[in-house]
Image 1 (cartoon, rainbow, N blue to C red):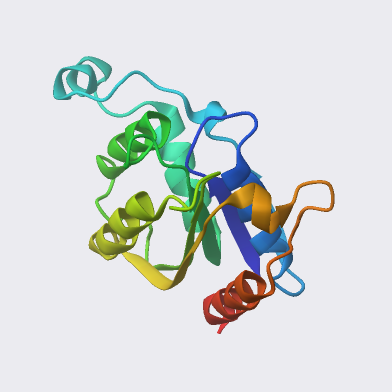
Image 2 (cartoon, rainbow, N blue to C red; image 1 turned 180 degrees about the vertical axis):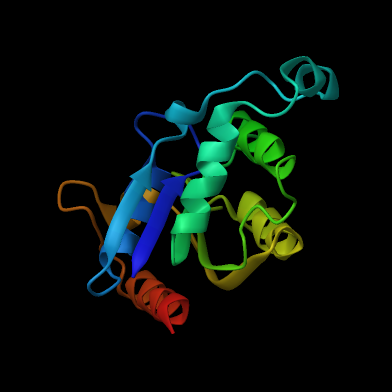
Length: 176
């Protein structure tokens, strides 16, 4: 199984990337590809920029193609002011101009985490609610609150038994 995973942020120290990578390691015998959103930087989307380019930037097509080549997708959403990061939203907006079915009916596991007790649950709720409109087959979602209290950064693993069990169940739902 080929798993595509990424954090929906351009942060170089992303705790969401740590969570997404960790979840991907739980998929047995998976070939995992980790994307860095910094490789998909583009001008802020606008109809005028799209017209000036006579289409979309190549990075949007590359992102769309990566999703298409995967058997399943794991995304962990960082939350900026209760919503998507600008880096992810811009990439998503450009990619949706190629095809509104951005997620191409791929099975998906949607995650989110933050240092605080909210666990980026606002952005996760938005993503989980809207993803099916963009052809995502959302199999499970999970918010991990208080990341540094529940995740051992040195060993790159969840230490909270309840969250670990929930993540294992979510990964299992993704692969069935």
